[in-house]
Length: 55
Picture 1 (cartoon, rainbow, N blue to C red):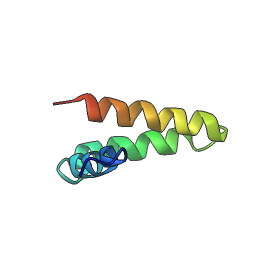
Picture 2 (spheres, helix red, strand yellow):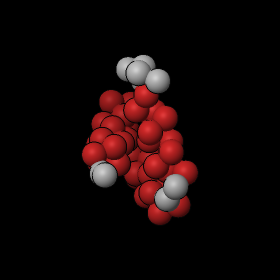
Picture 3 (cartoon, rainbow, N blue to C red):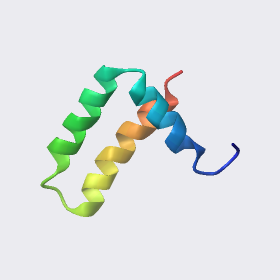
């Protein structure tokens, strides 16, 4: 609790609670798999930020 990495736990819990988010996250990763490492991370980061921003 209170760690700067706590968002990982929150993200994990949101994915565990919503199979549609898991499927969407997998689509994001598959869609970016042929990009360079920076673009791949950017695609994942945008998704994670959106999920964490949802109430």
